[in-house]
Image 1: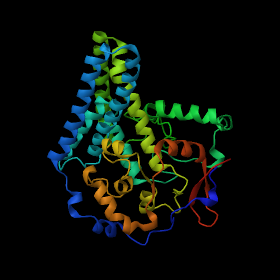
Image 2 (image 1 turned 90 degrees about the horizontal axis):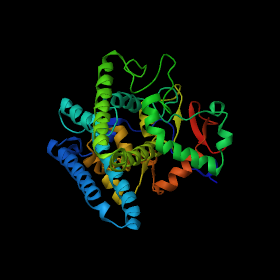
Image 3 (image 1 turned 180 degrees about the vertical axis):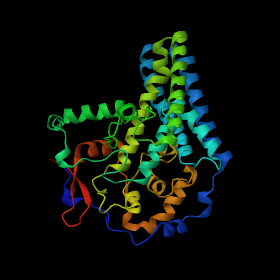
Length: 369
């Protein structure tokens, strides 16, 4: 059991530094984007995906039964990990960190995200608002913790190991599509149907609505392509080659984003105390181990600097992180706990938030009702 009294909480007061102090510590070249280098990562990831696909479709049927039962799960894990790598590069396009050309970033991001059944412009706009309102209990866009009075009636029936396991599996498999379709786990809107697929959703303003239609069209084009492939090769072929790796990608996406913003030591703020800098610092870097950190372009272990300077390309993010750590001091949060263990711990212990006993407007996670 984790005790609230033993948690090493960072300062929740206004930092003694400002954004320009942090920026001065980062080497200037970290802010420079290389079109050639960015495209090299796209080419590499797509090449790995193509090689894995070729191996699976050309050789797996030749394996004896016991080996095929091992080969397919290995393919799903590897392919899903590289799907998320491509998703991260499209995410970089959404932050205009891919190149110096906004139109090119949007074209690349749109194509890559659409191929992975993700609505590029829809997500880009809502994600920008998340960065603008991180750790705000009223205005953040996702992973907004509930207060004790807001806990659903059915939680008591899930507050046990089987219930936690059910919730974990449900969240990893359906969390991303439910967020996209129905804004589940997202900010509550009272003035209409909130969905990343609905152009008139209250999430978006008038000038953003055309981008939502484009996002829908991109996803529909991918669905149509999958339908044509299933007619030629069969539904089971599409599920094995594309569907299951996509589920792995969705699970990794939920894991990464959830663990970045959910930790017993992270503060949240109401409108009386929230400000952008403190909200941006209310995130934590995680270590997924060398292979996954590298495959996922270090989105895992450089998230703090990403929230401070989202236009830094991923290939400079590690250097930038190392540069700002001395400036941030106690305000910098990193947790080396293996991500599987951390995911179970946070899912079971970050139950709700409660106001700090001494500081108005500051809230911390509590472990039990």
